[in-house]
Image 1 (cartoon, rainbow, N blue to C red):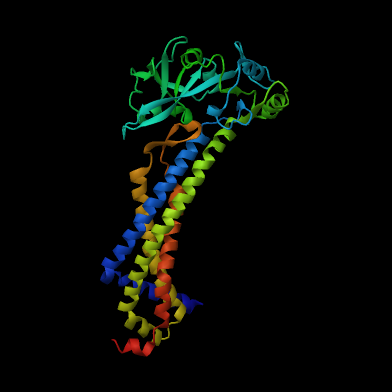
Image 2: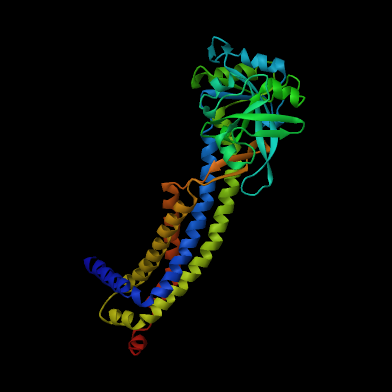
Length: 394
């Protein structure tokens, strides 16, 4: 065993020592691996960033009530009596003003994106004062809150970075109505992609009467959820669905996560095939140029397996270098970049690319795998070369 390890160590050292003589072809393989890993990391950074934004939006002690079977807020309609019955359910946290139950209306604003100028749907949420107690992660970061009864709005920080006309002091034009931006807020999640205004003003402007689309409630504790849900779902006066806010947004992210995962894996697979072929060509050249050296080692008693493994190690090393370089470049180029994509409610959700350590590790592992596959056929050729004919080439 010791002899075998010594032989492997010796052959690997010889391979690495000869890398300078074939630097050009090795760099081609490394560049190929680098490009694949950059794309791999960038695509999955989109998925991780989108998923994190939606998951960080929810609180375990907040419940979302929609019309039964609606699935999303834009498909839900709740009457004023429905909202009152929800607010009377047990398990809701209260203060001096009553139950912390926020009836909310959601419509869409068509706003031009800053980067492309094309119009996209921005969620426009009608709320009242209790909404800021229910969604207690929301904080004003600039300006002030809107005044009830006026055409004033506050804009999520990410929305203000993504769209024209959503800066502090701007006026939003929506049909015959104008809305003055008086403040910017942030919650670190999906609400930062929205515009918020006074519920009663929006109901009148968009001719919604007294109906709303959802009711968000602050529970006494996360453990009060089941009692709250059971009361509503067994009430014959109501036909509603009830979810924890964390579960609600996790469900909203599933479709996009699945699409990006499968599309990203397919793209990475296709690009990986190209990189593997590049590595195969590089390693074949390496084996051909070292045919005499390999034959000499075999004649001196070196076994087949150390020679085979040395070629695989070289391929994996090239893959690892490409993976590390690609990961670093992807981190520098993409981490933290803000963008938006279609989310729930047929509206855009703004989020940031998230290049995590776990994603970089997965990229490095994928690069090692490509290097291993790229070195496999050349390694088999190296151990199958006839010793006598290879020695005659010296």
